[in-house]
Length: 117
Ligand SMILES: [Zn+2]
Image (spheres, helix red, strand yellow):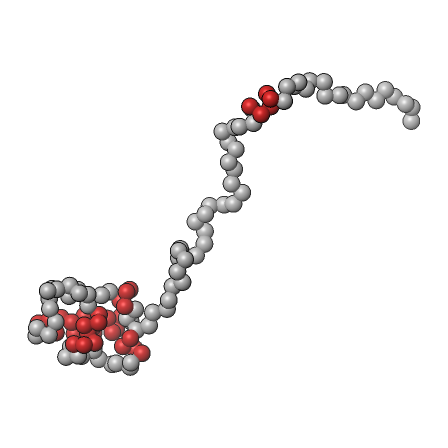
């Protein structure tokens, strides 16, 4: 091939001062996140591991919650006499229903308080 004039276009326009380049670097759209939305993931948050709750009546193989066993029922009510929910105690639905009936019967017979002292 013939030796042509390979005129490499030199970058003629170069800003002389380097200080001017630093000023224009900060743009409004500089924070672009690489990841997607942060909501995707397991529901639980926090450092604590969720513990598996079991129904205490199922463990003891109680087929009927007796309202006369106040010592047992008392562990499922608060200090103020309110019943604890099964989400807190971990009772199954069947035993929670029996427990609620037992608490109400025990309240009526004044074995348990309607409200805290
Ligand atoms: Zn149960």
